[in-house]
Length: 142
Image (cartoon, rainbow, N blue to C red; front, top):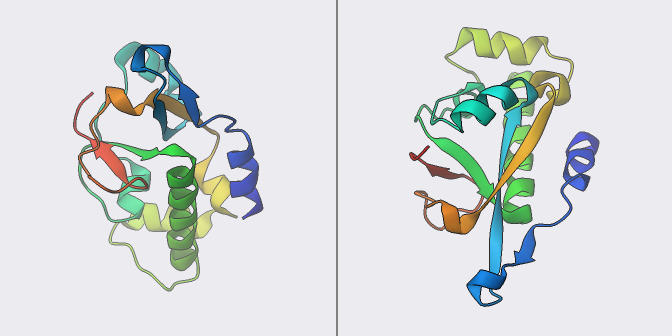
């Protein structure tokens, strides 16, 4: 949990006041991504896909996944850590042998995830297709 806490301490502000929205709070959305994808995100944007972490939790949809706000981000990381530990401790199996091997052979969740960053965007600019779920939000839009 220390790794999760250290990562979360880097997230400073979750809400801010937008003058064009009559002072209403606008939720920040967070998307975790590998540092290796930053150049591609800059040139192509965030493209809906089914990445390694989605497959780890058994989700094969091609979407852009994100969390709404600070609490959603914390909850997603905790849930992800639980799944990782269940796989690591042979309490849960994966049908994807390559992914299973990657988890089993990693020293810890930090090594499994590698270097990453949080990308942020305003909730008013995206529709969460997973209504009423701030943890596992997603959109099919680019």
